[in-house]
Length: 226
Image (cartoon, rainbow, N blue to C red; front, side, top):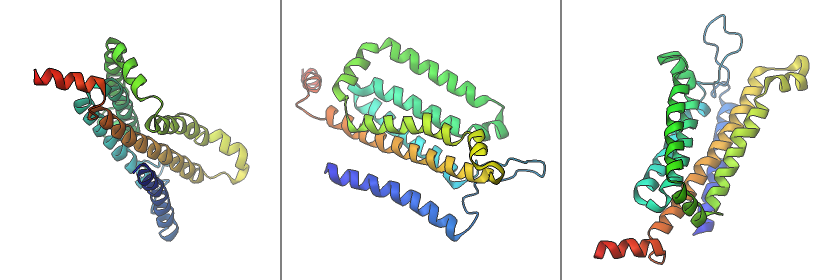
């Protein structure tokens, strides 16, 4: 079963990246990598690209999975709250352009600050449960994939999105659209890793919660019978 899951993950990543690439090649401009909002806009934005619009949907799915784990797998609730809060922060950050343009400037920072503070307080108050939950699941494939996605999003994306680097490499041939395209595809890959890691972690949490051989579950079932 595990090999089937990982084969599906592989084909998911290849299919998503391959389809987007083929659509842009066959229909130039389909990805809307650089959209100019007005005649005075000299930089353009990629926020209207299908790639950018896919990312909040993927992160919303991650939040929903972590909510399920928090509700139905009590032993893993602390981890689920932490990872769910991080997924929520990623999602709000991806929507910052629309928050600034359509609602209130910098509202996304306030939302992330409040959500982050609540998550930190919760984890601090339940730090013992957090350590126990991590000890039960670490190391695991889900955590490895989440770690890989985090490395891509926190490290690689900022490197390939660093405009002075591209200007130094390309010189007079520099085109911002190329930089944006590479940045968005690398970011999408990071979010795919994050989504797959979330799915795998939820699967592992379910296996722990509903496995009768786990002592904590035996004690919980015993209390219910009494």
